[in-house]
Each structure stands twice: as structure tokens, then as C-alpha cells.
Amino acid sequence: MERKKKRLKEARVSVNIRTISRTESVTFPHRGGVGDVSRNIIEKRERPESPNTLEVVCRELTEEHSGMLQGYATLRSQLSERDKKNGRKFGFIPSLPDKQSPMCLLCNKVLGNDAMKPSKLQDHLRRCHPDKTDLKYFQTLKDTFQKRPTLDRMFATTSQRNDDGLRVSYNISLLIAKSGKPHTIGEKLILPAVEEVLKTVLHKPASDIIKRIPLSNNTVERRIDVMSSDIESFLCNYLRTTHFSIQPDESNLPDNAALLLAYVRFIMNQEIYEELLFARTLITDTKGELIFHVLKDYFIEKAIPLSNIISVATDGAPAMVGRYRGFISYLKQNVSGVLAIHCVIHRQHLVAKNLDCINHFT
Image (cartoon, rainbow, N blue to C red):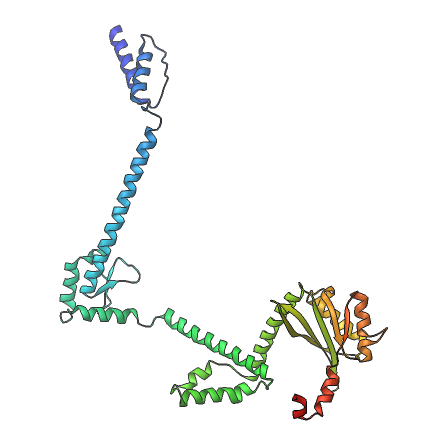
């Protein structure tokens, strides 16, 4: 009995030894040296021969797996190309919802994925369309199907046409603004002229094209306001970082309203530019103090520092060149060292009005 118990205990220990993995040192609370034997067995069977063996095995498995994936992708592309050729041969193309399912070009029926076999495609062609067997016919039918008008293409075409009409509207409004003509000329003269050219010269229906070009009085006014606002924003952004000279001038309109204009001259890209900065109405009077405050408020609104003004050109009016209450005196109090220049353009204009053209140009 004692021998049987001893053998049974050793058998249990050997079973426990087999279940332990990746262990270097094991101790057992029994006698007879079984612990040393089990440790030797585990070290020989479970410990790897070198520390990089596991990494090498993983690398080999990864390379083998990637090679299998590449081979599978190549095979799949070849099968897909072969299926496309077979589909075109029998009048089938990949369906739109599922590219793996064939769709008949004649009846628009979508078959299952297992129907990609040439025999099943040919069987469908013989049963449902026995009179259609020409490959060129199916190729033409495929091209027609792919070029058919869809919602995306229709919306894209309509959007492109509207964008073209909007661009033309802006370009014509810019021409109207440059010519100084009234805004109504676009709808009264330009659109009828364009319609006549389309009908007579190009022989195209002009009504649809004319409808996409908005050139009413209010539309032209909005286009000009948007373009002028963009130009003003660009000009003010540039004047914030450069020095320039300014020329203000006030004038009375026929309705006895006083208007203040301000021109700026600056250098950009080694060229001299002269642009209109603003036009503001003088509400109360045309004195130098009010002119300066209108100019200063505009500079504060557009974040343009007054210190960027290096020179100012004005006419000889007392409101401009007055020693104590003129515009230049108020400007020099805020910008020291500004150069004041007298502009004689008014006198030249008055003299040139009465000169003969020949004497003027010679």
C-alpha cells in the first residue's frame, strides 16, 4: 500500500510538471529529488534555445502572411478583371450598390454574387434576351448607360451654369462701374445686345442664357458695393503697414450737400499707386476741424495709424491751410513732421478749360 501511494504521488507530480510552461526554477515540497528532475525537464523542454528565437519565428510568420495577402490581392484583381470581361461579353456590368454583383444592361436585373460564372451569365442571356449576343452592342450599351444623366450630374451642371452666370454678372457690373454709366444700362442695353449676338451670330437659344445673367438695377448696385468693399478692405490692410501720402478735398454737390473725398498715394511692388480711400458726407459744415475729425474717425474705424501719413496735399482754401483752425494744423498736432504740399490742380483745370486743343497739346 505504501508503494502504491508513493507511485501515485510521483505520478501527480509529473502531471503538474507537464502543465507548467516557461519556468526556470521550480521547488516541490516532497522528497526523493523529484524537484531537481522536474526542473531539468522544464528547462530542456520549455526554455527557448536563444532569446531571439521567438522574434525570428514571428518575423517569418509575418513575412509569410504578407506574401499570402499580396498573392491573394493579385489573384483577386485578376479574377475581378476576368469577371468584368466575361460580364461585358454577356451584357453585364458591376451593379451600383454592390460592385461584386452583376447587373444586366438590358433588363437592369441584379444577380447574386455566385452568378459571376460565365455559364450563369450566358444562361441568363439565352433565357431572357436570346436576340442580343453581339459584344459591340453590349459595349455601346454600357457606354450609353454610364453616360446617362444622373441626379449628381444634373445638379453639377446646373450649379456650374449658375456660377458662370454669376461670374458674368460681376464682370459686367465692373465694366459699368468703370465707365460711369447708370446701373440700368445692364438690363436695358447690355442684355438685349448679348441676346442679339447669340441669336444672329452664334445661332443659339438666347433666352435660357440671358435668364442666368442677373443685371437689374439693384443687382448691379449690389455687385458694385461688394467689389468696392473688397477693394477697400485690401487697401486698408495694406495701408496699416506702409507709409503713404493723402490728399483730402471737399466739394459741394448740386443739392447743396458737402462731400469729402480722400485719395492716397503709396508704393507697392516698386510702383506708385493712387487710389480713392473714402467719400464721406459733411453733415454740419466744411470747416477744417470737422474735416480732420471725419478723417480721424475713418482711420480709427479701419485701424490705420495716423503716423503712417508722411505728406498731405491740399488746395489753398482756408479750411485746409488755415494757420490755427485749418485741416493741416490739426493734422500736425497729431502727426509731427508731416509734409504739407499745395496742390495747384484746380488752377490748372480752370486755365485748361479756356485753352484751344491745339495749343494745349503743343
